[in-house]
Structures are given as structure tokens and as C-alpha cells.
Image (cartoon, rainbow, N blue to C red):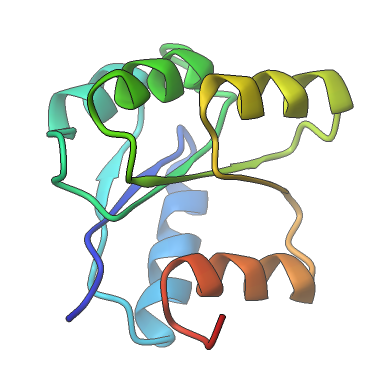
Length: 123
């Protein structure tokens, strides 16, 4: 069974890159959102297995997405994928309920972690 993935990033080229990367490795086509508002409109408790989320959204706050999702779904894996490598922001994301915090640009290790959470490589 393919995982249900929600991909949230304000950059259309980044969403396209991530979608193609996931599809090329066997994932089902993810649903996509460009803003916090779109993400929360698509979100339904137990509707997704994985949310890949950029914190730096042009419209809305990625941290608020984490908090709102966690209020109604404790099981979904929330993978923060962002350019911000600041330890304080990483800690805030963790406290808000992020499962993992990965930084852009992607390294091989980052790609492997992302694939692990999407169950596309052995854990």
C-alpha cells in the first residue's frame, strides 16, 4: 500500500522536484499545498501518513501547521524540510510535534531519511 503524502512548500519548483523524486522512488503522487492555509484545508485527521513541510511559507507559518495537525492527529509523520539550520528553530519544531527536521539543500543522507519515512527504503 502506498503512503498518503502531503507535500507543503511555497516554491513551485521545489514541490515539483520533491514530487518527481518521490514518484521516481515508488511513492504515490503526493497531494500538494503552497501555503499553510492550503495545507490545513487539505488536512484531515488520519488522512495522511506523511507530511513533508517547509517552515518558510510565503503565506502562513509552518510551525502553526505542525501545531494544528498535532492537535488532531498524533500519528502522522511530519517531516520538516527547510533551509533553516538554526538549532533553536529545530528545537521549536520538535516541541511543536515534528517527527524529523531535515535541511535543504539535500544531501544523500537527507534523501535517505526522507525515503525511510515514506517507507521507500528499509528502516
